[in-house]
Amino acid sequence: MHAPLDLKPVILTGDRTTGPLHLGHYVGSLRNRLALQDTHRQFLLLADLQALTDNAHDPDKVRRNVIEVALDYLAVGIDPAKTSICVQSALPALAELTMLYLNFVSVTRLERNPTIKDEIRARGFGRDIPAGFMCYPVAQAADITGFRATVVPVGEDQAPLIEQTNEIVRRVNHQAGRDVLLEAEAVIPRVGRLPGIDGKAKMSKSQGNALLLSASPDEIKRAVHLMYTDPNHLRVSDPGSVEGNVVFTYLDAFDPDEAEVAALKAQYRRGGLGDKAVKARLETLLQELLTPIRERRAALARDPATVLDILRDGTAKARAVTQGTLEEVRDGLGLFKL
Ligand code: ATP
Ligand code: MG
Image (cartoon, rainbow, N blue to C red; front, side):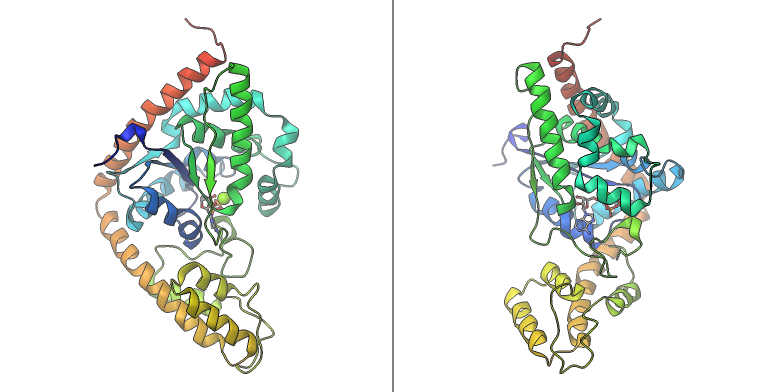
């Protein structure tokens, strides 16, 4: 017997609609979202408003990628019968919650957020930081609490943002004198941050170092071939370093045979295992993972009307939930009623 829908704990996660999804999303978040969709009431947010906070000059890209990200969700196995997929800009309650929450966070606190600091550096904003970008953690607090989510499966980079959300929750509840909002917990996997194929700390759409879930067999082959290893490991017989070696981090993330990976690491450290052999193993694993995803995605892309119906249905459900939360928050904070 299934538990009644409303008794299941709620999950909210989302992705900025800045480009198709990549292996980092899969490892950091999608894999957990897939595993949890049977036991939780799950909402996935196509975060187009958050994408605009650093892409206001390119709204076409943000709009186009709403469908691209939705296709990725469905292709990896997100089931619209279990998970509601919704569009952020079609949920005005979230914007209104953001406006209210902005009064419960200081500018200094926003500036201290380590994720934001990293992202500002990576984007080269200098002093011209869009105010919307600086405040996106508050909008994210609105997203999570608006859906009454208590479980948030995300990559490691998101941990400070969940902390920021819970601070806002406590302040709003304190002001309301009762628990209007729920605190949320981040669920972060063992490999919580997949590096880029160039060895940079994080695979990211904005950094051009990603391997897409929709990559062709040749693109997969090329990405693995280019992958950063140990620059001092020149001959097969040389001892090599596993730390900071992207190929081994990927094996940790994608190879189900942990004992075999441990044995390979030991052999690599001793010397006698070549990059070519390790890369061949990884390439096989990635081709096996991505082939069915790519094929499902291509089939779905031929039927955009069905994808739009899924988004309309998910967004309607999301509208009801988020509007309900907004009304409770307005009430809790004592706003004027007409
Ligand atoms: P952008 O560069 O536009 O910010 P992104 O690649 O960082 O894009 P987001 O949409 O910001 O992707 O992130 C969505 C989710 O995917 C978050 O939960 C984030 O933690 C996770 N994620 C993204 N990249 C990685 C990665 N390299 N490793 C682990 N998790 C990741
Ligand atoms: Mg990001």
